Image (cartoon, one colour):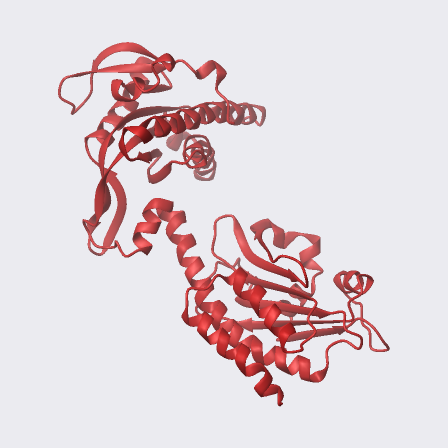
Length: 411
């Protein structure tokens, strides 16, 4: 049987993967097993591809014969590490190569990378790294970093006596092209999901990816509404250099917004220096769970604020403060705006009231206030501060301050 005939079933299978809704981790593991099945003696394989994510620059799948497939992600700063700088992957990218091979045993052995020495010590006899460019996958690259990965990097190693044959290398290169096509569609889908969830949040991002992209698409939901706003922002913008104010904003968001997502809530919008979040629920049975999640996020926010302000004071920076308004009710969750520019958000009486409640935190000198609808869900944690008139809200509203501040934690 010719080599072309041997790899044809694998190539046909890869085409079906490209046309389907495949998981890249499972697909890679199955590819490695199929290669073993047709006689290509792969013992170790690594797949690396770029991604567009606020935390991660690249993702990888690792396969070792007889072991479960493993998925990992590289943070942006990882590319500055010594291990990356001395890796064969960076060498291939810097020199714009499509293939890098190192025999690890015999008279032609070349151990010019630390990885090669490690592989030889572990009993491997041959290593080949293949790179395939994937145009159309847009990833951010720093100035002067033109050779960063814009495609897939795939390494193969074997412990077979004599290493890979020329037929093995030919087969791996031929299969790489079909595999790259399958990877491209999957990676593009992953990047689209990352972008949608980063800029819209998980709930809204999923709605958009499911096709709810017309103005008015959405639904009425029940939710605990969280609204926070930075204190003295006007004077801060006038007295601080732009870069210092930008850093302050991100520190404030780390305290006021991260706890919401960490405890199951959803950040729907950053309105200047204000944060709009929700903890959705369905029916009274889930209402108490949503309130408890919001309470845990509140404790975390207060604890995190104290910790970050201590750091700022030690570093010679000004403290920051903000207020939080909480309530619970029905909101309209969906697309608003104009057809050419939409925003997925929530609107309704509960949202407006949460914003007005937050405004009262300044007047009443309280970091947190809630209305009766929210406070009655955890009555032992809230204390009435009287009835007050809220701008734009009919009638007086009884407000409650939070009693859990002294024991606030971020657990």
